[in-house]
Image (cartoon, rainbow over all chains, first blue to last red):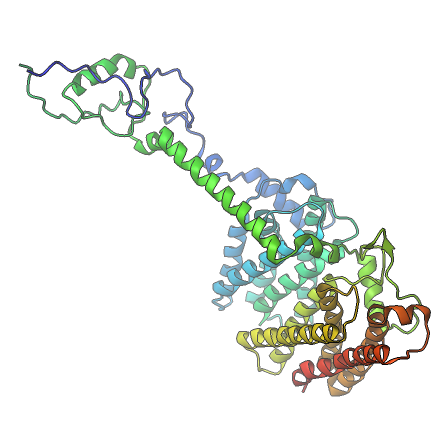
Length: 203
Length: 297
């Protein structure tokens, strides 16, 4: 004779807990309307991306040190892809070189900035800043699609764009890490890195 | 006799408990369970159509995520602790505490060391002052940047001669690094054999030996712009400058007692040390020529 079993009222992993709908949930709700927007969940904030892009595009504007507090790798990824795409338009299939050089360059800058600054810096922050400052290089490579850069005009333009990229990158690093008197010292390795990108665009 | 317990998989869409990892089919009372849950279940329009959310909300997976992130934090701690054993990060930070003024003056000193009078490093309570404040202190920023620039300029030079390929760049880098390591080991061995009591650390030595890359870069760039004549002129000038620079700097470190008073070097022990200093200084121009002559045609 089997005894009538009690109805199972608990949950599998909680010994005795009656579920009530009003207990606070550790997750984003189980309703479709309660879910946060997809972009917020992914951490992509278009307003911040736009602000950072503007900071890069105005090299003479003073940068705010706090904009780099949230490392955002979505923007730099888009810029790297756009750079590779403009190179593709010019007939150079070199996505591998772009990614490889950016990885090595980011690693080198990360080591150097950690050694040079009082406060440390995270790898994501370095990658994010260097990726954003790649934007003028995209202009250069799209210019290379139409005109060849191997002439006096090309050399001057390349030098100007390298200077623009490294100046904005060093400006953001200096303000984010509070390093004084070292802007040129930070700009030089950035210039080396962007110089290698420019070499890929030109040759 | 109770009815046969048939397992009925129950997944009422609007009534699933969000904490439930899977459907409870443990007893025939699952129907009762569903019925019991009915009133409560209707209270909230559950999106049980998304079992993924239920998965993420479940306490076990919360625990799993917390465990995973603590594992990552532990791993990072382990790496940080161990990297300090192999690479003395705090000591290295001293060599990178530079600013633009220091770098400018040091580069000027490397190209024109003839007028500089006082080569002694200032101390502050037994520790040498940071390079920012004393131009005589060695730093690692200039040698590191000069090394990387040398590799890139070598690539540029090879490119203009149509001999460029990326693995040649790696070859240049590794051969220059190998020569540097050899120099450092040779000097350390001679310092040991001559039992020289000096406060010259290995990193100091690497810094001093890395200063010659600056002259090499200058020579190669001039060679690219003005051909062999420009290359030989600038390289000759840089060789003499680095020779004088090394003699004046190392004299203070290796021949510490004798040089401090400025007395002429006498005695076998001091003479051997003087020969060592001259040998180190003479090796610099030789290596500068050896590492750059094949880049300029």
